Structures are given as structure tokens and as C-alpha cells.
Length: 241
Image 1 (tube, one colour):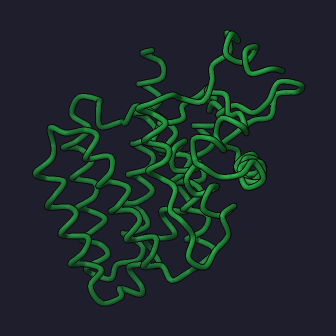
Image 2 (tube, rainbow, N blue to C red):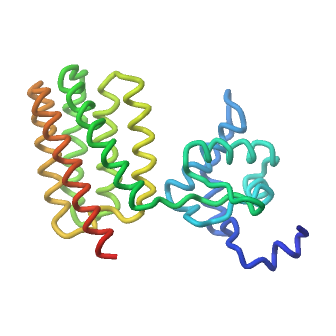
Image 3 (spheres, one colour):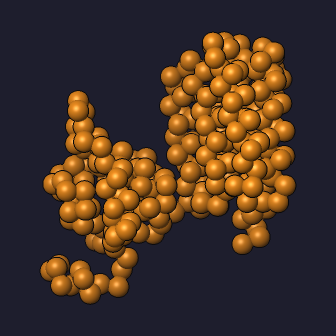
């Protein structure tokens, strides 16, 4: 396909400025790793943050030009992101940012419920130095941001990330990182739902109290209940569309 043909195409293309500037900002020149790793990280973050949103087309030449790299690391990055489920190959047409179905979103919550429960249980048992203070600091910041749903969503992931990291289990950390990536693709946050901000803060505090007390059973119970309630709110959001 010629350059003019691509210009006249009615299919979506890789975002132009200012989106292109945002995409470039995600690329960090590697000091020790490969350029493919850097491009993969940049494209992943662009997808998770919504800069590259479904169903945007991801054309190798456009992305290479935007990121000022060759097509080789872009091609490999798209392959890796396809393996992660973030992109989808369309036969004879190219690659697009993958959309999440309702079934996939519900599947994420089903997995997250169990994994977050295990993480909270393990964190309560291990209680590494500084964990309770760090969780408390995030919780207090969330209390001051109840009217900002986007910021709350960011802090919510930070809260759960602290618990995940405290587990000391590299496999659990890896799986929950993948879950976090999926959650970031949901788009609208459950904190947009009326009353969810205050409700979630109470749930977080219950988890925090259990971890601080070293009560593994209760920490797991509260984390599972928190995820279950988040799923219920998400379902209501989706049905209201």
C-alpha cells in the first residue's frame, strides 16, 4: 500500500499529535535492556493509560516513525503485546488495540478475588517493615481525594500493589501485575458510581486493620469481600450503559 493510499484510508490510524507526543513520552531509552523491551514497555503503557485505545490500528511504520526507532523492535513489541492479550492481529489488515468483552472483565474479577485474598493473607502473615505505615499513608491520601474518581482509582491500585509486593511471592506478584494491567483497560472506574468512594475506603480500612493485627484469615476475608463488591458495582455500570 502506498503512502497516499494509507493517508486516504478510512481505517483508524496511530494517533497523531498530541497523542503522538504522549506516546513518545512513554519511551525510555534503555541503558542495559534492549530497544525491543523499551518499545514494548512504551506501547503497553500507552494502551493501559488509554493513549492508544480500542480499536486503534497499530501500524509498524507509523509507530516506528513516532518513536524514532526501526520497525524491528516495533514488530517484536506488537507480537509480545499480542501474547499478553493487549493487541489483536486482524488477518490481512494489521494489528489493533484489543477490546475487552464483558465476559473477559468478569473473568478478571473472578481471578482477582482469589489472588487479592491470597495476597492480603500472606501480607498479614509476613507484615514486612513499613507496610502498615505505607498502607495507612495511601489510605489517608484517598480520604482526601474522595471527589476525584480518577485519582482514587490510581491510589486504589497503589494500595493493592503494596499488599501484592508485601506477599514476597514472585508468582503471585506476576499474576497480580497481569490482573492490574487488565483492570487499567476497563476504562470507566467504579469510583464514578455514587457512594463507591466512601464504601471502598471502609473496605480498604478493614483490610488494613486486619493486616496490622496480623489476622490472616480476616485480611483474606475482607480482601475477597472488597473484590466481590467491586465486581457487583462494575456489573451495574455495564448494565446501565
